[in-house]
Length: 449
Image 1: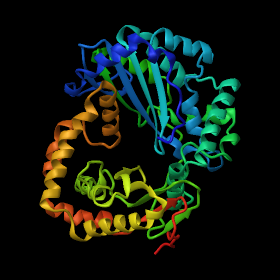
Image 2: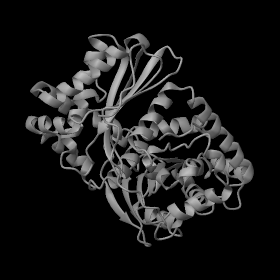
Image 3: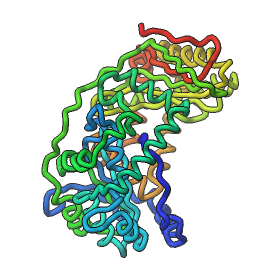
């Protein structure tokens, strides 16, 4: 999520929570019977009951995210996410943290370009206190000057480190080049120039504009019944405005295809980020594209990029590609790191394999292996209550239906070889935008086609 890392709360290191977390994970892989809950106030959530473990997790998402930041104050949403648990209501930062620690409650927030998300984890016996603290954080955050400046200093420190981090530099330049002048081209965490501009009033205004019941997505997993969930939903979210005051975000068309940018940096390896236009999550061709991406570089040892770049030539330790979809655009992206003097060869192999897959499409063997992996590995996304809640929120965001988990394997099985060959050309045939950070000899910048 392009977030500045924070140290985990002290209570997470306690033996009680460690044991509870272990217990939490055991039954979760089987706990995927999802029921729809509607609160007395009309707030909807998806619930997975697990009575055998005395824990509850809730994940939720508000539409908005970093795309709601003003251009000159990028990083506002990220700063809000870092500060919501730094005091709320009549509790200052120290008192709020103490309440969390005393009851072994975990509350976290994070932000992406389109969404502001939060997670609550608690023992069932501390349910009332946990949900009340979350209510305070969302409805009456304090944004006191001392914690604001402390967290701002932490964010700025992280941004300074990124100025010499080749992965951060490559990723940042890729997004800026792909979406110039659009909110998607800005970094979620902001910049060294914009973060100092964010005022206390900016921080207070963001929740008032973004936190609303409209477009709210919620998932709850754990030892709790539907009636109790309904009451908790109204307690936490019921006082929020019905509608958000969002700035419209226009659909974005990716730019820079055929372009290569080289950013000089004295590092032993060169870092490469590449990508091109993708396929929207709602597009009927998404699942074939998902399979094609896995064949190209989707994270398994059988991917073509892994085989050609690492196994056959030893050019890099890892190489990957993935599909990325936002509300206003979609793309596929990938990356690798290689020795500076072998960067040119690595780029040539990468581009050749992408062109070959676009022109020829996958083989029957490629398709069979990809289907087997994608179906078999999905359970790893459902092996804890936290992962289940996160998946359920994402499924709601993507409007896939409450029965998606049970239907997913059949959707993969339905993908034919003809589908993948047609979609490979559509997904991979338009060229790449590539950024390279380092000092690779013989690798030069190129203009877009």
